[in-house]
Length: 480
Ligand code: NAD
Image (cartoon, helix red, strand yellow):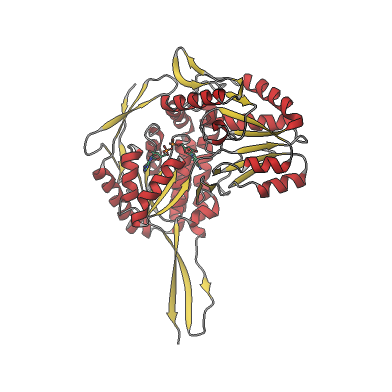
């Protein structure tokens, strides 16, 4: 069934003014899922004007408690639609239905409900100054937010931007990635159904190089909140520079997990396979480098291959499937090129290492593990963004931390050990925005998430992220 989707601008479902559209594909079947509008400058302009009018009108004038109630309602409506939205997410993104229905959708609902509570808890300070004056600070919304999000967690990452921005009192123009736009448009329905005033949330679709870049230079957008690749983040920052537009960047990663010999090795192997094969490795925080202490290296590699062999790959709509197709053919090709480079540079394939299909269709790559990887190899340095694990050896904690920190990224890391001192020391020494100890991938809307180094700056989630959607005004009054 082919559907012609429309965009959400000022509370209306519209086509692009140019009438242009582009197609969206199901990565498991390679069938068309329909078309979405290709937003041009005129459409962006209308969306930004609507967001500004809502900011200065009904949204700006609404009480914080009422805003919070609406945000909470968005979470409730999302929970009520887990079934249809998770099917659409899986159809468009390729992630197993198990993940979209048990993780992406419930976590998104929880995120709206967490930030709903913040709407009424934003306040400034009174500041002690000289006796002749009175000073207080106001916390005001930054304004119109341009949220640009990637294709790996279409609903969840859109939510990570929308929920805090709305709690802070901002309005939003959301642009999903061009290959996964459908559920972002459906998210638009949640806001209209919940009763948000028109223009508070606008969803426009189009390619990053045109629509996304136009958002960065649009004078009516006050801040860009971006999640995507480091390469696009650099371009966006350059595009934002001439107008000094605010920007926060959540970028790529090459996250290391350190497995010490004293660890619970079965737990470490469960964490490592989940850390790399969840969402078929299309995860900014994928645990793509596993550093294992020499004396347990062979045991860990054997356990990894055994566990990986049991992962069911196939039709992502099957609730038993744990590894779906990559989101696009381009992504599959890029991953296969990395696999070829790993082989050429002398790493040893101990699982997968090749493409896969279901009835000759789908952009699948088999869950792949490379052993005997050296830290300088391309597969140990660059973000592959696919189901490819690079397993390396280390002799002691000093070497493990040095190798772990030796990439340009710093998004996440993990430590597996039963020695509490070793765990604390490693957690401090690792240069990453998140460190998991004896677990992998835990996430909560209350906990800030973001990168060190070239994994970006600013944080999603938690109180810390709320600050990035607020600005502070200092007010002085003469008492003399
Ligand atoms: P991408 O950078 O190609 O695209 C992300 C978004 O930016 C898309 O909406 C795209 O259309 C848009 N875009 C691309 N070029 C642009 C430009 N010049 N100006 C404005 N917008 C532009 O990333 P992707 O391939 O969709 O996603 C994968 C990347 O996202 C990986 O590197 C991954 O690590 C990263 N990621 C990071 C996090 C995090 O929280 N740090 C989370 C998820 C994904």
